[in-house]
Amino acid sequence: MSNQQNYDERMKRIHDAVELKTPDRVPFIDPMENMFAYFDKGFSMADVLYDVNKAKEAIKSYINEFEPDTGHGLSALLEGQGPMLEKSKCKMWRWAGMPGNIIPNDSIHQFNEYPLLEEEEFDELLKSRGAFGMKKMLPRVWGIMEPAKYFNFDMPFVMKPELNAFAFAFANPHVQEMVNGLAELAGMWGRYWGEVGAFKHEIEEMGYPIPWDTFAMVPFDFYSDYLRGTMATSMDLYDRPDEIYEFVQQQAELGVQALKNDQWGRPGRFVEIFMHKGMDGFLSDEHYEKFYWRPFMKIIDAILEKGMIPYLFTEGKYTSRLKFLKQLPKGKTLVHFETVDMKVAKKELEGIACVTGNFPAILMLNGTKQQVIDEVKRQLDACAPGGAYIFSFDGSFVGGKRENVEVLYETVKTYGKY
Image (cartoon, rainbow, N blue to C red):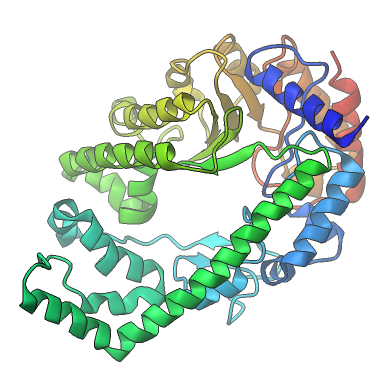
């Protein structure tokens, strides 16, 4: 078949599963976070973060050999972004190859969680999110933005004194250095994203769809991940419920508007949403529904209005949340599970949503060939009957034995036929 025919066949296989149909065989979604492809070519994560051509070489080699139903592109693992992260003086991430070699060269990047909103700053945030973001949040994440503290964003900017103060701020040598650095950074990012788009097109021209077009974020996760951190958020649920509620409502509206303005997303493609803080035990059902689920449903509705597919990537145990997922519109979403009894999840969401995930990626590193075969068959026996299922790992594909990868693909493609 031609590359276009292969592409169409793979996309149909995925769309049939999402639409609760039974495709010709179980589709296999290859994770965007695929480290094995790099290690198999002899590259470290530091190599691909600082040399995007090595990442391209490894990706093309991998998909040509194993032929998954989806290809993958650049950026999910920060491929090629090392120089920009350095230039921006990023504080929130730790990445392979960064100055000081803080994490191992073969490590996936690490998120350094700390609050961007201090206890006494709530009124300041809710008064003007824009001003707070420029003066406080951005500098706390990106060192390049620290001179923003010299601006007074609360001024009306209509009278001469205010204009003079603004002009003097720009005359500050630290601000000038910031502006020049941002201009250079803009050029670096512009070239990078152009290369990302061109490579995605190249992979799809080879016959491998990359269905992830854009992403969104759960409003509560934004609050917990970035504003307050996990520990402070746990206390805020009881000490500041009104402030959380107001913030997640605002964030939901901003998220809806961002999706409406997004130029990347195309009908029939995925919008990926990592659901970080909704797992069993972190929130009560009451808190989950009020602060997490209801604002998030506004994002889901906005995605569906664009004709796109919400890809809900649940993290952690999610058994107690299945009752909420049953509220999803029928045949419109894909739900990825990290830790759940897939037989139970498939039954609970039958006729509602396509399910994927849960295959333990660690087995590729620590398991034998026979253990991989047995686990693949166990997953397929539990989930494949009746369709509405896509095979995938529980999370990132962090590496593995080549023989295990070979037998994994062989078993999914042969045992997963209908």
